[in-house]
Amino acid sequence: MNGAAEGLQWFAMRAPFHKEMEAQKLLDKLCIENFIPMCHKVVVRRGKKHREWVPAVHNLVFVRTTHSLIQRVKRADIPFLQYVTRPEAGRNIPIIVPDVQMAQFMAVARAEGEKLIYLTPDDLSHLGKGTRVRVLGGPFDGVEGIFLRVKGCRSRRVVLQIQGILAVALAEIETDLIEVLD
Image 1 (tube, one colour):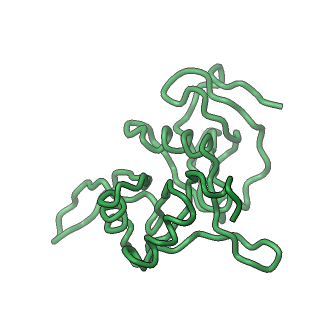
Image 2 (cartoon, rainbow, N blue to C red):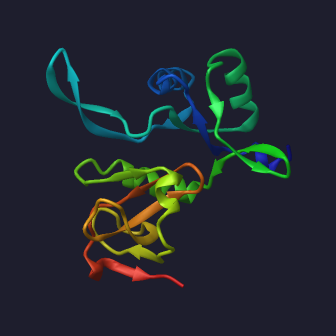
Image 3 (tube, rainbow, N blue to C red):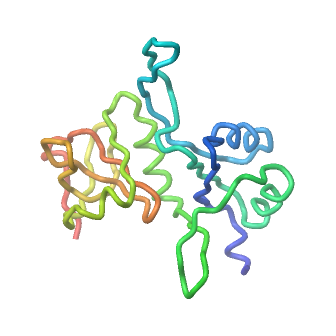
């Protein structure tokens, strides 16, 4: 690894078997910045419906650290934590999310009052290419994404995508709050 790669980076990680919250507690204990997109879901326990704050995408944890530190943590403290990878030149390379993209994603994911729809890369594969846009004003001010029609929604939405991992469709946005990018 070169010196630039040893700076703080956002790694997309998996915590198999629904252990993302356990991984988050261990990362917090080690003072390592992390993020799990959360949402409210209705769950049934003992025959009663409850609304709970749960991970929006199971097993997914974003971790901001250096490559060498995450390697040590994986070996010593959280052995079940795995990289989310992409194939490149016959090897699997860990996915690193750029800081700007991660900041926008976290801002959107933390907007509790908004009706967000989380999409997997497979969900997006059948959608046509949309227009790149930026939201102006409102709770998503400055967020850049693609203006698309999302299956199951009547109107088009701005979709913020983290390539190869997941995407989130923002709540319906007034067209006068959208700026088309080149």
